[in-house]
Image (tube, rainbow, N blue to C red):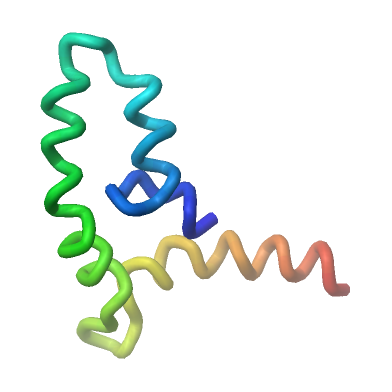
Length: 70
């Protein structure tokens, strides 16, 4: 799940780049230089002690963990 997030150093960025229309591809690739900054903000915890990433991916991971590890 984590690696599919469309942020520059992760694989999701390349997958979305393959789906973006050709005329907007250069604009999408220009966001690559901000990828690490965005990733840091997603991972670091903010108010309440939870990160943005944990808030969105946590329920999905819990769901699959509940199915695979009864």
